[in-house]
Length: 96
Image (cartoon, rainbow, N blue to C red; front, side):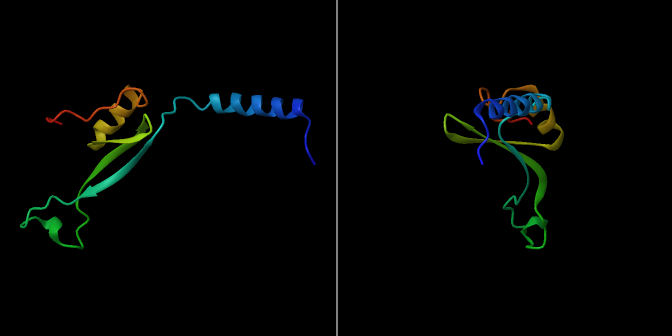
């Protein structure tokens, strides 16, 4: 059973209005990452060790290609809320 076009359009408008009320949303995803440093004498060499971290990897598609930045925990939250990732994404400074 199909609904009339007018009913579907009003349902769509209501859903768009509800979605707009959710607040600030950004494209992409943030994942928690643990890494191994590669040093022979480090504890992370042990397979049972989770690795160094957590670090956070922010991934977004820019011009159809995935771009990824890694951030330390506090920096991740500050950076992701301070810029629009779809137009301005860059790696963190080397001093971070």
